[in-house]
Length: 79
Image (tube, rainbow, N blue to C red):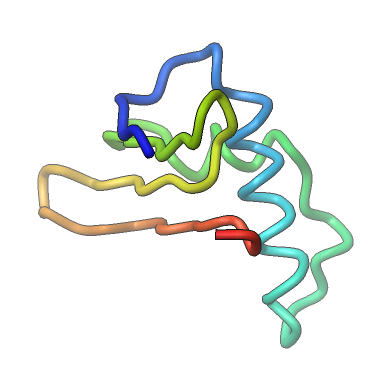
């Protein structure tokens, strides 16, 4: 496993992980309006680290650094 800083090359894979994680686990919410674009909106201005196995994104964490706040932590179901 490798951890690296997020970059735009990872956008599609991280957005899919974020969308899939939210729609499969937020059972108390109506998730029908969620989209791939939500990742960029919901993590704007945050530091993002991505976990990869080989070239496959398996997780990420986003941190709002001004308050040392972990905003998002997502790991794929397979990992």
